[in-house]
Length: 572
Image (cartoon, rainbow, N blue to C red; front, side):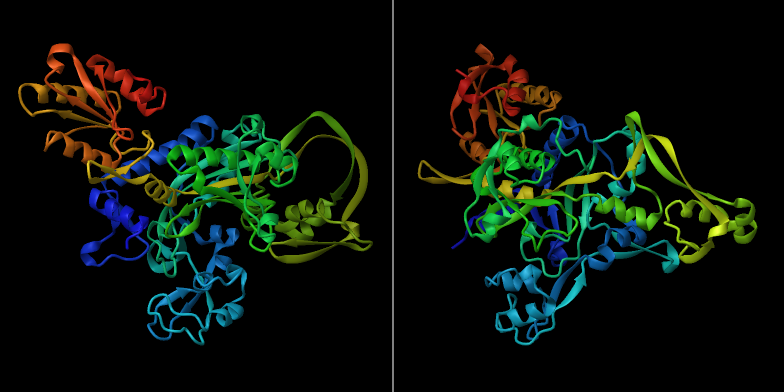
């Protein structure tokens, strides 16, 4: 018996939403093609995301290369630690995600087990590919990045980016100047990321090439009260905190104000973007009854993160699927790139009034230091300011070399100075969206089957602003001038930026069904009354109700219906 997943994917392939890539050569798991309608849905969801983050939040978008040099991913930790635990089935030689095999059989905390413990936990389990018992297998770490070479001769190693975030982090200095050296500020990026998944078996849920939409919001580490928090202070939805998970109790509904005051959520910034994400997902077409926010458990949260939550969407086939991650990443990323590159990745913040402070000043005797250390003298003098000298001298590190500087080559004194500001390294709040997972959730949650006049009516109940075709225009008959009027209406709507589709093929009922199946929210029918009274029939997809409206109202009415400014039920 087919389930919702089978029905959705059958419709998606048949009607041009999504299908396997390179089918003529044998499709490869982890890659998909978006068809004509799927591409439209994808663009509309991306533009909805931009509406929330770029237009409403004021976070400008940048676009970075999808290939990055190795140094960037050494700093970010991806070269060393971006890996999954893998094993190979002795019977069929299929490579498997060991933790996924364990999780499928209710092994608790599989993702946090060591390779040795995972091997022991799966030895009696069946291979998901061939069904035979795995037995004794070796579990080992497999780095998920796609490696490449930049330029000829393999002189410089590069990687396809596993996330869009690092491009924003390394651009921090230029972005800071763009935002006039003030905090807070944010920058966003939407684009392709790549992960060489071991054994992707979940269609659109786990891809090797996928689209991410990420925002990096740079805030003062001691000022995490969001300036517009009141926008979402009373916004409420289910939260599954780490304490609730450990106690094995259900998610509980909180307002964001209550969640912050009760320390369920670490700070207002995290709470604000949890609420914004909830609103965005519901606007896109995710069923709010199948949406929850789960806090990372202590053993799964990154050691540097202050707080981390996942927006999880329920799928009939896959259960709760992580779709968005919202984290307070502290200053980990900027500090890592500062250590690797030598740049400061800090912001100079000027005080309102100067502060009088005692400072220790180390004045190097450059007359002696220069001849003794030559080209390193200036670097040594600067490094001395960061040391705590001993009785006999101080040790500094220059280009990896430790140098002892005798006490008679510098003078230490304390003096009071006016301090006009300080350099601080911002913390980063990161909402990270998996666009492809959002699209699958919207497809599944929008799919419905009704019975109309003894026949099954398949309908995609997309929100109007997400629908690929926004309005269909039908002449009742493709003659007697009705087709000319319908063509004129179609062009007029297209001139308004509406994606309108003209269709005169087949019986009118069949045309309605075709448009219902791809989610077109409204249909306009030009009939034999139109030439006489200048009215047309406007049909609503969900209720199947029809009203007569004036033809000259359509250019204003259809955009208003699509944007939700006018409800169809309000039309006479």
